[in-house]
Amino acid sequence: MTPYLFLIMLSLAGGLLPADKPGYRRGFLLMTGTSCWLLAALRYVTGFDYRFYESIFQTVSSADLSSLTNLEPGYLLLNLLVARMGGEYHTFLLLFHLLLTALIFAWIGRYSSAPWLSIYLFVTLQYFALSMNFLRQSLAAAILLWLYPFLRSRRPLPCCGLILFASCFHRTALIMLPLSLLLCLRISRRHYGLSALTAAAAYFLIDPLLQLAVTLFPKYQAYLGGKYWQGNSFVYVLLPLGCFLFSLPLLCRALHEPDKPPVLINGIFYTLLLQTFITRHFILERLSIYLAFFSLLALPEAALLPGERRLSRVRTWILIAGGLAYFLFAVNQGFHGVYPYRGLWDRSLTP
Image (tube, rainbow, N blue to C red):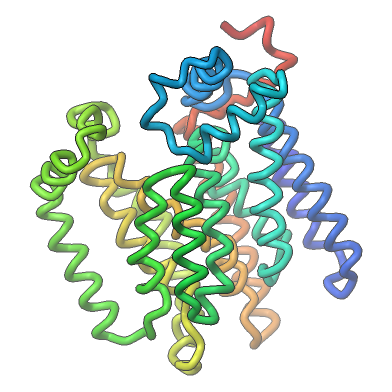
């Protein structure tokens, strides 16, 4: 757990830096980003899918691409690039995590109201852990973070182009085509009410809907009846519910600013609706990943809304305590197979 505690302490230290010093901010982002990059890239058999992605790289290196026809072209090209340059799997991980970390930390640096708090949540709310397991989907999610400026300015064509590009790394990114429209809708009782009713209907009809989906897309039939097909406890809904309740100040602000697209609070709301489906089938949680990443902006912004300074401090401490509690819960549950962390220096001890 030591590497993760180091990242947590490093991110919290950023809160002590003067906010009016851009140079300090850039240096802090560079230091924390480099730390996350190296820890993610230098791991060994850390992450449930570590061996799976290693086997993909080895297949690409052997020029046997006939068995990878279902692999997304963007991810395949990344593997080919490293393989053709003579690199090994760990060379690939260095490049992959460099791209992913740069995308996320540049986004945080540009749009977060408190970068140190966003990075703290990146580690404690398990987005960092996810990036060491779901490689293709985490890179797609990192690309889709950059929808944010286009959603705020209501520019649909760049949004569509970015979503299609992200789908070259994981096809589920296409779910953001309809969701990006919902993120820009104004907040109203009709909007949220109809969305909640639609989600409730889908929740109870999910099995026949999924049977239809796997009929149309047979490659996903392997998930039927598997371990990811089981439902999880409602305990796993507490995090998205807590995030939504914590972000209610953003909802109140959006009601008073109807001309501005309420992207962040809508993202938190739809994350809650989508993550509720984890109680039916665990695999469905993956559909919420793209929206969930927006909480890295939404939660710090909700904590630091202009107003009483003392109240902002209380909210910030609540957010820090909540993040730490969830981190400890994730460690206990072994989220993403990244606990404990093992690096290349442990290679001789790991089968």
